[in-house]
Structures are given as structure tokens and as C-alpha cells.
Image (cartoon, rainbow, N blue to C red; front, top):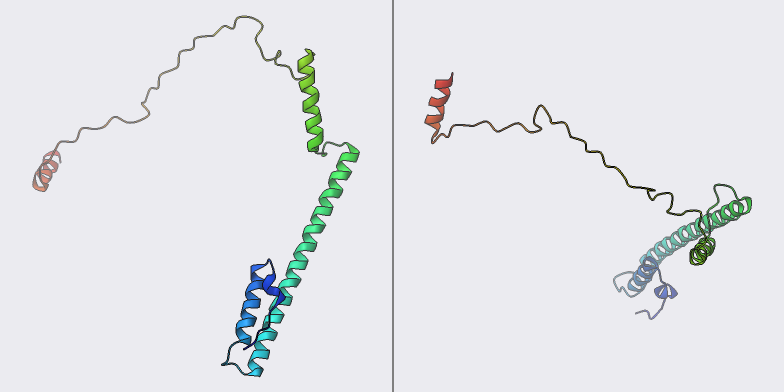
Length: 159
């Protein structure tokens, strides 16, 4: 029995933890001989290295993407073009400025005076046109039939 502990068992990644559990299980398996243990442990090491390479590549892509975003936002803020997006601090400063203008009684650019009517509003009464054909057809009366023989007789009478 092996008392070997793996640092991978302390990892935050559940996949790496599973690989460590598998390695411990393989080392403690009495049915495997030395050659089989080595082969299985090498396979687990290969899987671990592939997983770490994928994680490193993903972290590099994320870092590159964040750097690209930061560069674009810095370039956009410096040029003052239409593509520039306001920072949260800029929006908060503008809101404070507008709130202060309202308290002082100063007319703000976006006032509601333009939307309020200047006098009484006349409402024209419009009569809606009636439809010539109803939207849904009226139900057709179907004679009640008690049995299949009566139904056949009714159909024969109509034909």
C-alpha cells in the first residue's frame, strides 16, 4: 500500500482532483503489477499535462482579450469619437450635475416642457367602420342525430 499524497488533490480544479484520486487508487491496487502501474500513471500524467496546457492557453486568450478591450476603451476615450463609451464615473458625474441643476431651478437641456400641451387638447370622435363580413363565421345548425342509422337516413334525405 502506498501512502503517497499528490499535490493535485489540493487543486481547485475538479478534473485535476479526479486525476489525483485515480493515481492514488492505481498505486494502491494490489492486482496491478509494476509495469501496469507505470503505464497507467504515465497516462494520467499525460492527461494532466494536456489539461494544464489547455488551461494555460485559455488563460492567455482571456488575458489577450482583456488587453484588447482595455486598449480599445483607452483609444476610444482619447479620440472622443462616437464609438467611445462613457465610463461609470462619467455617467455618475453627469447625473450629479443634472440633479444639481434641477435643485437650482435651472432649465436642463432635456426638459419636459416640450412634451406638455400649451392649451386644451381637442379630441376628434372617429367612428370605426363596421366589417362587412364578420371575422368569425356564424355556426351552422347541425340536426341532432341519435344513432348512426338515423344519420345515414338524414344524409339519404338530403341527397
